[in-house]
Amino acid sequence: MAHRDPVGMTPPALVKEAMGAFNLLREYFEGAIMVDSQAHITWLDGRYRRLLKMADDFEPLGLPVEDILPNSQLRKVVETGRPNLLDIMKIGDRQLVVCRIPLKDEEGSVQGAIGFVFYDNVDYLQPILKKVETLQKQLSRAQAALSRERQTKYSLSNFVGVSEVVTELKSQIRRFALRDGPALILGETGTGKELLAHAIHQASDRAEGPFVAVNMAAIPEALLESEFFGVSPGAYTGAEKKPRPGKFELAHGGTLFLDEIGDMPLSIQAKFLRVLQEGEIEALGSNALKKIDVRIIAATSQDLETLMEARTFRADLYYRIAVLTINVPPLRDRIGDIAMICERLLEDIPRAQDMRGWIIEPEAIALLSRYDWPGNVRELRNVLERAAAIAPGEVLDETVIAKAMPRRKPRLLGSASEAELDDLAHARARAEREAILDALRRADGSRTRAAQLLGVSRSQFYEKLKRYDLSN
Image: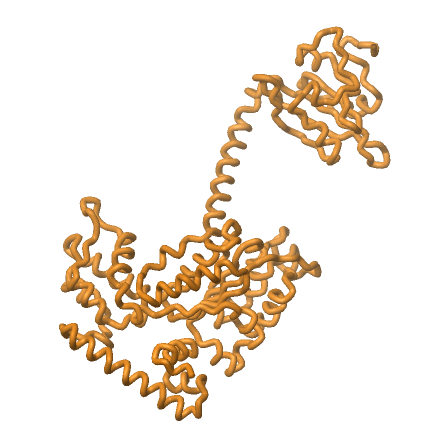
């Protein structure tokens, strides 16, 4: 058995060197232990033995440190070569404040580690620990909030409607969600394109990953490169000292949604295309490439084919993002869903505490159904919010809705009977079909040119060709 000094076993020379740095603190720590490069105990001072209530005839030398201290992190310090300067270790029902540092030779190789017990009672550190606990809670809340922001807010059930076009659309969304290729969502403003992007992500294998949305029209052109690809430290004067990840990196493992992609400047399109082709990004000011795994979902209310003809949108980028194309029908093409949509929108409109809920009368629904809704569901929501603001009670009747309707009334048909409305619908369909045929004749069969003559997008034109059985 090793010789003992008044404090404990004589410490090896390496331990003496390590303890030299702690001479000023010696009166504050209550025990020390040393392990070798295999994390086996090579030395234990007497105070630590008494702290652990060891029997005088028990010799721990040569034992793995976990046999004596099950919660010890000394092995990790040995393996990583990194110190653990302040920690709390539990032994039974006690909590010890400990410090662990690696022991290295002159060449820097880790030969072992030494641990010190500073306090046998954490009450000394309660103010610090309380502050740390508060900071940890704040960090957890911030991380949770950030995680919620990067998750989907909507599912397919939020896209309300049971009309034939909506049923077909939802079926298409479910099929596309099972694929992992880029998707392009086309539709007029206010039709719910972003909602459907959320729905695709949530129903896909990437649902557990982040969902990062970017509105191309909202970012200044000068900032686009740094926003998408990130910034390396010192990339330019005033750049942060830490790397700032871009949208691609933030969306790694999930989905990057590009709203209004038709507004993407030509200056960024080439680099964007390269990222989609290679699956790699290069941060601003960096020469290092970083692999990314991101699904792209783009949306636009513009006619991208017209933009390609005008050479403001690259054809190769279009064909890269339009692998799966989704056409979202305007509200005027699914008027039968208006009652259901109103009920859903009214659930989110604030009301007085004594109200049971908003009630919209059938006559009000009929009035809403005679409007063509150029702003689609977004415009309908605005009308309902105005109606709720001016309504004397919880009932939204025809009078209240009429006051809330836009002044522009392109298709407000008064009190026409159902038969009259049906005749008008047939007349309108005949006129529209003839207009399409006339446009095709004037355009010598060019569908793109015919769509331009009619002032509609190419996707809308194809949809009308299908509706009137003119596809061939």
